[in-house]
Image 1 (tube, one colour):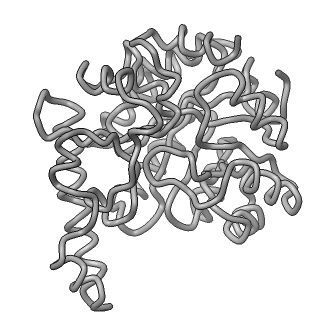
Image 2 (cartoon, one colour):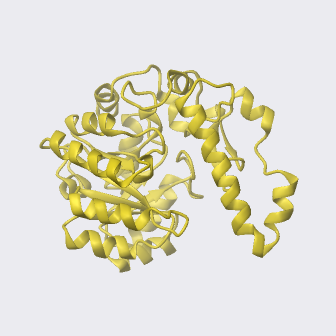
Length: 315
């Protein structure tokens, strides 16, 4: 399974364990590296820069040949910690950074100075061309089967469209839960895949057993879109609680969102409320079960160690 991604990161298999808010941690990524793939953690999973720095030091100490590790940065103005996070990551070092939700220009410039590769989340060709021009090392093609905030196009359409116009590698994100899915993405022209939801139900994941078991018990048909977390459509498991609260924004939010001067603040408030709800559901046993996941949990049949999940993906 030698591809441009395995060459870029010097990993055995062309797989990135996707960064997942509240879920990803040092133990997961360490086991990912031991299994011959790359692992990535959202920098926002750490409340302080000192905690982020300590995580990098641990991952550097745990790194072995055939594995790689990186961090995900939210690069728009909503992330007030962004500049500090970028500075710490560049000071301590890692193999790659994945950027989301904003211009990656500063990240690319600073990371390349210290030899860190930068992959950028994109959902269409227009943004992909922009990040290529800025010097991105690869494009993460977020398709309409991804968990969380997904794209609008099918994996096949998006991968083929990007490949036709880009000179940098395309890594597919979304819709991968087994070996056949990986083979399919590579057949479309992807140089690797980013896999998230199957790793939620890992022994090492930093969430409750209830959240993990939900990824076993529910399947692709149970994944729905909701506007009640961040104000932007996001995929969640359709639990009884989600059914109770509904998936659409409230009528007050709907009215306020039509006011251009207020829209930004309404969205920020909704994001803050939604993130607190998902954190409680992920970290504590609660009836308010708002669990983010993608349709690839269809292939999740048990709570397993990361190494077993990787083994299932490559064999």
